[in-house]
Image 1 (cartoon, rainbow, N blue to C red):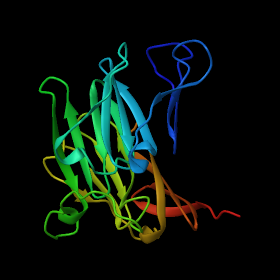
Image 2: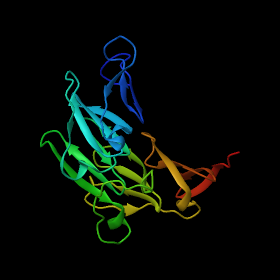
Image 3: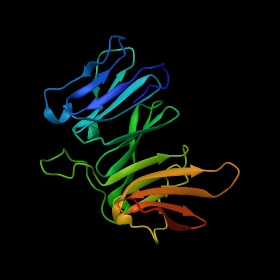
Length: 220
């Protein structure tokens, strides 16, 4: 991860901790934990002068000019944090089955999406990771287009909101192998009202345009 506020400042998340060249002396370990799962760093992002680190067991934060890390606490204290996205000063935190939004003005994390709710089930509870559990989680990708428009790619399809997460809808999936999704890229053309989606799957790359999915690349 390259810090957008500092030239050539890089962070590398590994299974044995977080490394950075922030001291100008090559890469040094700046985060480690005695707990094996907490040592496994999965994602990193920054906003408003705060560094956010997602691990296999919990979310940690620190001010960029400080050496002190602290747990986010609450439901995110022990949950695996697979993805971190940002828009402006707002951070989006992805766990196994839920998406949270961190608002720096209130210093609070709010759950805005759950795979359980999206599939008409009772809301899934965050749990600490277990041995043999799915290593990647049910949420595969998150694309934050704006504060109102967010796309969430799951193992059961693509969901989106256009009103800041007040309401979520299932994106049309006909022609797309939704159970084999791996990633998503949202392409917004400023000169056109149409939104183009590129979906990566185990069967190749698919493109959504003119209200339908078509295979753009079959793969090797």
